[in-house]
Image 1 (cartoon, one colour):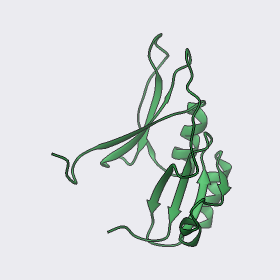
Image 2 (cartoon, helix red, strand yellow):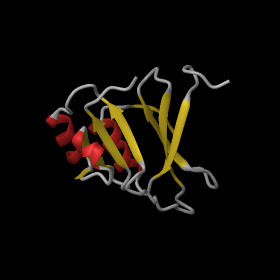
Image 3 (cartoon, rainbow, N blue to C red):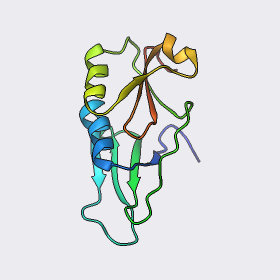
Image 4 (cartoon, one colour):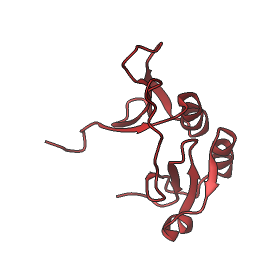
Length: 132
C-alpha cells in the first residue's frame, strides 16, 4: 500500500552527471546518497541525490555507451515548497552552479516563486507557498 512512508525515486537522464550533481548538491543543498564508482560496461552511471533520511530522492543517470538526451518540457517541474520567499543567495548559488533562471510556462509559479533550469534543462521551482 502506498502511504506517507512510501519512498519515492524520480529518475532523470543527464548528459553530464558532474554538472547535475553540482547544481543539486552544491547549488540546492541536497546530499549525495549514493553513486556508482567507475563505469561498468552495459550499466548506467548514476548519482542519487536527496535529503539524508528523506522519503524521496533523484536518481540522475547517464549511459555513456548509449546516452539518452534529456527531453524536458516547460511543465516538467520539481517544486520545493519553502513556505517563504526564496532566498536570493540560494537562487544565485543555483545559477553559479550551472542553473539558468527562467520564466515559468504557468504564471502561477512566477507569482509564487522562482524557476531555475538545471544543466539538463529540467525546471526547479522554489515556491514561497506551503504544501498541506
